[in-house]
Length: 613
Image 1: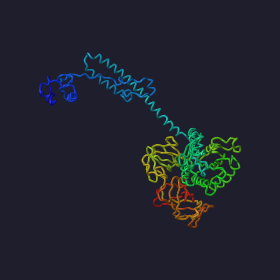
Image 2: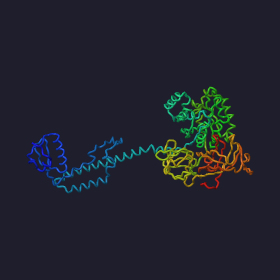
Image 3: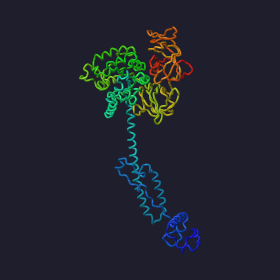
Image 4: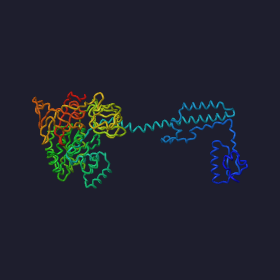
């Protein structure tokens, strides 16, 4: 029998009776036709098609009932597995139906009351099953409420436990009233500063044995077996390859009495500006001198960094000095008392000339940085029988600094900044104190910022006192709007930002080809974290070194060794204070062609344009 020309013919009855027409054979065409009909039936079904049947049959929809009963209510907790008490106590992850946020007691009772009102319209025949169902729901609701209460209690306890380490750490840090000291290691290149710093961290358990073994292997591969302790402080590959510290290394260790921040300053003359940056943050200096024959003489002679570092440290406010005579274990020394006394005899007159009180502020002690002798524990008699003084840790613990008041105007020079979930700045508090949430001002750009987080060492704290080295996360300013040398200060008492200031200078040693210091002399100014080119605008008056009083005679120029009051001008606004108000923010050095030519202190701010008070 021939197939219809179209399915419309079938629907309209064309070409014969649709009920008596035989179906096409079960083939690909038949399957395609069945698919089309199925799609049509989904919208407005009229026919059903069975490929195995012989004819089409019209689709008759089933009669719709007049009343469709609502589906039986199933409590969410009935579908979800109930947690056991052991799982709850262990803080197991709960099904959403069992979580505290599922339903409150008030809302559950409201829902139940609504269901009761609906059930009142039920027939008498359904009353007993309804009552039984309601009783079951009440029991489920009671269990649900108890379950929610238990979950809420466990959830609150887990949150308290999760927050406990952080809060406990903050409270512990806030209540830590141990003295904090910033210790800078200075001295000639290759004197052993980084090795001593690494040995201190190892002896104070800040570095594990596995790391030390790793550094030993690396140093041995480079044929520098004695450098492995320095690798703890010198993390830069360039520093490790050359054996020279370039940037100021920073680390932390502590004793029962004191918390310390180590500042490992570079010893090479090319990196003196970096040394100045480190020494400006220090409270105590450790002048490292190599006892090996020839090394001490090289560092102490004219042009050696032993002299310049000691002088700069005093200028930058390092009032206490420990002279660590290192490498006493060298075969050329062998813990010789004569060598130790020789070095001490040569150093003392120079330190007196720098302004140190040798009896009160300076202490000598022999050590071996490579092997750790006389560092954490006193020297055993089997190694050195003539030394009965303290070890390095004891000498550092015995240093006492004047008490710093936390109530002064806040001053924190910035030495570095970076981006980490906001703007983070680094520096040392020179005055005042800081708390999380404080509103402060960054000078000289007068940007108001808010303290988001305060980090001391590697711990987050709520409060920090003067003398602390901190990292502070700020809001209200972008990283690119901050430069090293900017100062965070109080909003009510901001630090002055000036272009000119008057200063008292001590001329040290001028360059051979620039032997006269007069108006127009240009140099590089180093004051706290600021490094700025400056020019001498004029010599105001000279000071008599004996009487400390001004000389009335007008002065046009001075030479090495003179003391003179001058006016200095810089190209950009810088933040400085008078020395009498804030000594650490009012002392500075002048360098020219890589050499320190003068040291000075700020004495006055002239009332001129560009000065902001």
